Each structure stands twice: as structure tokens, then as C-alpha cells.
Length: 120
Image (cartoon, rainbow, N blue to C red; front, top):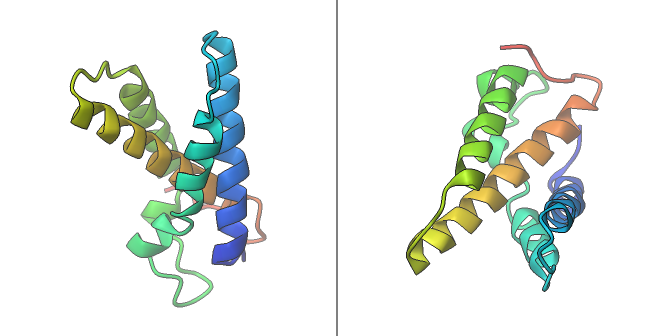
């Protein structure tokens, strides 16, 4: 099972790479956004473990499931498509994308472990 430092480094690279790819596809200059989003995601290495603390090896339930991951992907898509108007909305959008990316990166790393993720 991965520990918080492993999750933090994986979150950084996964979210930074994803941000860079999305910005390149959209033809937007990077301007450091990939590094910033990766750093924000690295600060949130264990979001799923806050909801389901890893008190024992079989702690993975709904918030560590493949079903929840699919729901997170849908929610992230909605947040990504959100056209924020005010400065606070833009900040909220960026924070939600970073937190969602960190959550999904955590689940991806857990999925690669021996215990994997439950379906539901």
C-alpha cells in the first residue's frame, strides 16, 4: 500500500502531465499552470483516506471504489466545462480541478496495488 509521500509525488506528476496535455491540445501556452496544478495536487495526497481512514488493510469501501472514480470523472468533466465568470469562481474551479485530480491520482495508484479497488 502506498504511503502519503508516494501518493504526493504520484499526484504531482499525474496532474502536472494531464494539465500540460490538456493545455497543449487547446493551444494555450503553459505559463506554469501544469507545475502549479501538480503542486496543488501534491499537497492533497490522501483525500480518499480522509473519507475512509486506512486503519486496517481492508479499509477501501465506496470512496475507494471504481464506481466512485467514474463519478469523479463525470464531476471533473462538469467542472472543466464550467465557464467561471468572477475571480472567486475561477479560483474555485482551479481548486476543484486540482483536488479532483489529486483524488483520481490517489485512486489510480491504489488500483495498481495488490488490494486494487472494489467495484462498489
